[in-house]
Length: 161
Length: 195
Image 1 (cartoon, each protein chain N blue to C red):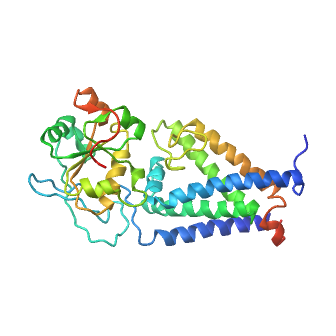
Image 2: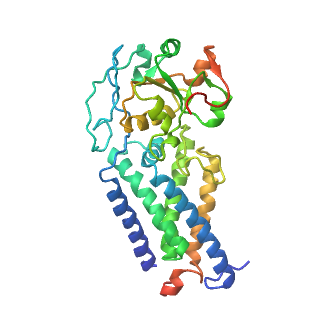
């Protein structure tokens, strides 16, 4: 099986679908979090990171959703596709590590990911399903980092590679 | 590759800058402030307190002393906890509104008789009407599924942030399972009387 060629029609269509789905999920997640910073802070606290200072939790409660929003919008538009996919991949890698640490430490915690809504896993429940869900999205993001956003995006219009 | 990394850093910086600006002047309560002193016959009220993990708030605040509402030493770990007998006494005397912080499915399967269903998600667009209509001036006893559950604390944080005249607040340490196990009054179905 040959790997997708960055500029091919098939990859461009696939990349468009990946961008809209992945970017859309992050825009949706960001919009929920931006409406409830208190909930985001509780979500961060639920991970019980030892020695995490209060001001970092508070700052993270605002920075995380805004970064999700910027990266999601850029990905959907096909603007700075590789960079926005890389930002999303970095966030997903962090989420996977955090969820895994919760599972390993046998901590009961709720996921503030999509509020009361769900993607593949049961809403709020933190477990292996969430690891699989995030890993799937991570694979999608990494494929965009590797092969770019295809023809249908602002990068092509602006001459970015 | 260098260009991608540069764009990546710009995205992170944008998130950091706008997030930091957004956090300016807003309030997040990382942990519950010490409970307000509770006096029988008075109208004790809980208001947000600066410090104790709070960002500065623009609203005027009082500085309540750290006096646990009551309860045996076993409940001292969280000053908001009350044991089942005390909660039952308030239930019998009608001196508190009981708030169920669990999900709709669990609520319908069984809840404390006459409890209001109120979850942290209900505060998305400000305090729900039933908070203003039924909780102002009331002692509020919140429960979920026990001491492992953080939903009760989350609801109380949001009630305090409403800055309405409510409280004092308590959390039933053993939650609904404890209440049910003790054979105290429960009912099933949707909430009644808080429309």
